Length: 566
Image 1 (cartoon, rainbow, N blue to C red):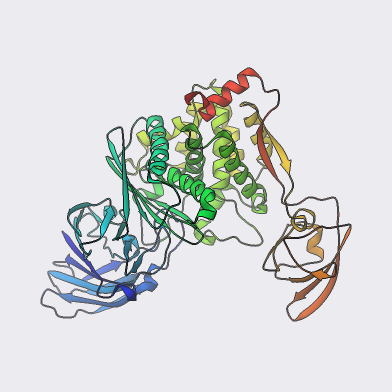
Image 2 (image 1 turned 135 degrees about the vertical axis):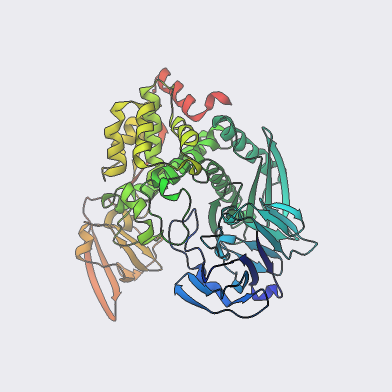
């Protein structure tokens, strides 16, 4: 057994004081590895920069030598010791769903940030002691024997079980089909406890009924509710961390939409990703990048179903669900990276460019395009099978045969299951959606016609963007539509000082046939005339039910959205 103790001599310093004890008999050296990334975020993470005052002692308290042999690996000279104690501090002061925060009112730890492992000890059980004050409430999916005393079966369970403790924590409970759910909230929430429980229970019941059961008897929603803008969620096997805001009355409606959206998304990850996993991540390898082609499954399937379950469960109305789809359409069709990289290429390149918006745009989102491709496949499978099969059957088959303990899945295996349910004629569609940069609008329109819906073109609301292909932030040009005529006149980084002789206000723009810019480019002040052409940039689509949709189309719509369940 590994012993781990975390204490907090002064929470105002944000420093976790950590001790780890390992048995290391007959080993001359031992590599202590700090994870280089965390599941749910497929990019390298700089956890190592928060390590301070690292030391190693033997069972007698004598100091042992060590050296950094990799950025995230400490190699210890054990000097034939039977047991070593690793001591260090971790600076915990970054608020999001994948990091850690310590202050005078909370202990919030994602253990993957700060707990070392060794290749030899990952399967050993861990006795965890956290110095939690007696007046604190605790939310953590690990077994707690006494306040602050936890047991983890192995390293993988420990780092998959975040902890939040605070005297201000509120914990709500509900049950679904024999599974116990808790909602732990730190911070104000602009909705009643009854409303939160009611809607969380609705989408939980819908997901569990659709998936024919739930893989765990206890599940925790751990929510950091903030008074400033934030939106983030991270999945874990038996819990999720949700961080969002602002939580004030003025933003009440948008807050609740975000809360429901991220909560439903992360709950579906209980099946997809925390258990159903790509072969490359079965099991996780935390020491370096783990590239996968199948982000269209991990996040594409999940984003699609996270929103759809909210409609099928009655949490969202049809109008609210269509609004979510319109948002996905905007995010996809306003992204010129869709012409540059396929969905599979973008999945692989997460490890190269992370989640940053780059210019020139070179990638698509595995979440956004992945969800739209999932919609197309779901409706296509429904059409080919007369609604006898859906995309959820593919998820169920993956859960039956391709969890991480079964070795995960490959792209080819996912394709084979899709063909099993959708038929041989779905093969070319899979190639087009995932392996080419072909535009999705034709495929979306065809798929949506099966459920009596249509797409209507929508111009960007900002004329500077729609007519000239320019996007700005704080008066600076951040993006120009690739291939637009404006590229001949302006550059990313130009600061717009005046527009047609008036101080530039990007919120109040009406353009005529000719636009005169006064810009700052480097140290130069320039006047530049840019013509208006008939081109339209950064357009998108809105979904609506087709006027005159047939009886069968409306029946298909009802089956898709679960209208018949209400």
